[in-house]
Image: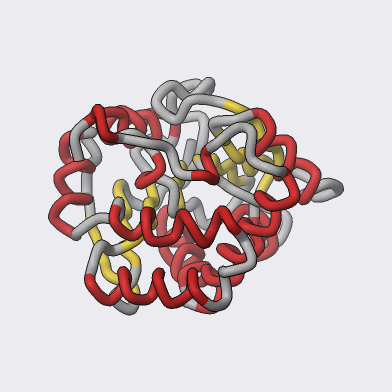
Length: 233
């Protein structure tokens, strides 16, 4: 896809109806749970996090905050900061409302390619199902930013671009998701903007990530990890 042809998905429109956006996050959160992706994120995050002590995590493109809420639960009080970063203030405000009362969870508006965080300030930097939302020319920089703030410990999950996923997205858009105009329109586009394993590896290497591993999840998603387990920062 040429840079000039890039268009944001409906979910990325700052003028999207907040109620429709919240409903779309619910749809996607359910899929993350049902597909086993949420548990896979926890398993791979745990391998990168310190075994003891407080934990700080940044999640770029956190959506409704469902992954951060789940990690907070699994970390049993150790998560002192779960920071969700969104490109639009309205999305960050929506996530803040949905996670109101949950200590340690915060949401802010920021550019994924210029995170307002000091180097090595987080134990883990994640981007789950959001890398394909970033304009292609900014993806390497966004991954480099994750590595910078996460001390090299990075976790990425995203869609696998495949014929099967294309068919699945069209089927879901025509059935379960037909009542939500955002998910119905965005799902096929998201699959087309997904990745093959080699593409994700190349992006990570271009961003300077180390100890990169990419694994498949039931053929529909890819999970990339970089960096090793640590007891810091």
